[in-house]
Image (cartoon, rainbow, N blue to C red):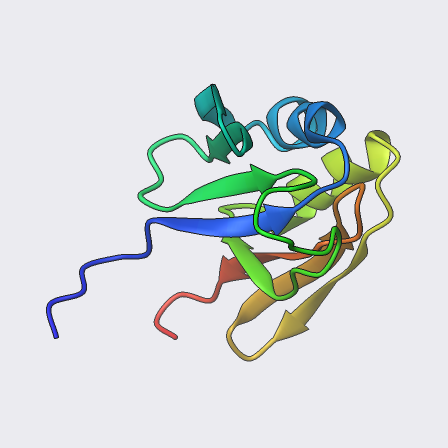
Length: 124
């Protein structure tokens, strides 16, 4: 096997413009692709410098159910500050909680896709 990384993660959404506002304006992601294709709009976002991007897959793009993605882990250098920013934006957050591997919190995007924030414990 010579796999080097994951190219993209599909996040099924019901409204790509609304999802874009969340991922770009609230989470601070950068738009890496936004083009029309015969199958629909191809919209991708990512944290600055990330190797893996997130495809915000709208209706008709692959038959995915909006809100069905779970367990998407986003690593941050300051989970507490990021949770405070999410709360200020009106996003309900569970946590953060101290765990053996670091501090972790969870929240959902506007469609209900499950996301987590993690500040990793040094040396774990």
